[in-house]
Length: 243
Image 1 (cartoon, one colour):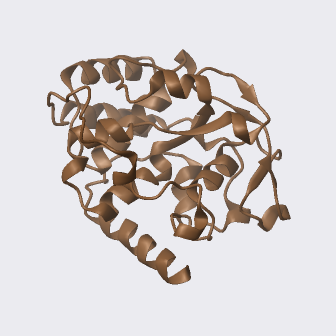
Image 2 (cartoon, rainbow, N blue to C red; image 1 turned 135 degrees about the vertical axis):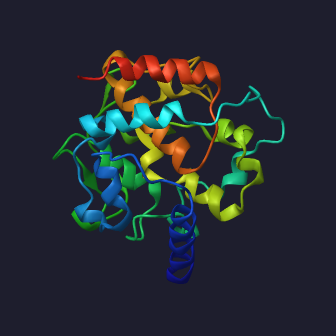
């Protein structure tokens, strides 16, 4: 498994190195998760970390220059498996924190309320068995991992329709497991959001600024286009960011 982990981690590094991710400074514990051992991954809710003023300003600037394209609502060729093995099985090597844990458990740990996480084998274990999470999409609190889902801010199906269908398998795997594009939320809001873009779906008002900055960051990092309606929606959300 170690050999596979190394290969996957190298693939992620190679993808991000050429993905055009310069420009947005985002103050988020997720950024450190790519090289932090499981026991040290920040337990503060990285999902609701506030972007800095410079990040917001950069997001506005980046948004103005993003590629605009008509994106089909549904692409019948999309399949979840096209983005690699689901992260629930660490044995398959789907991990990007360099700690041997699968991505789901890393995000559960990162986004939990500070000091509430318990893992199967103590602080060094991978499997999160208890904690408290507040879904940033609607403010609902959960204490059961079974109630928490990990959402892709830029949905996989939307990425696929936007151009990911032409990516390499390694690039799709990197996108599907990139902490910057992941957030722990409640199941109901995740199902409501589904594969919708920002012009059709928005989270609770309190999270819209963070959502917009992270959506722009992820789309830019992987050079994904957005629709003109998405651009207007994202601009609207950014306008409500703290001045």
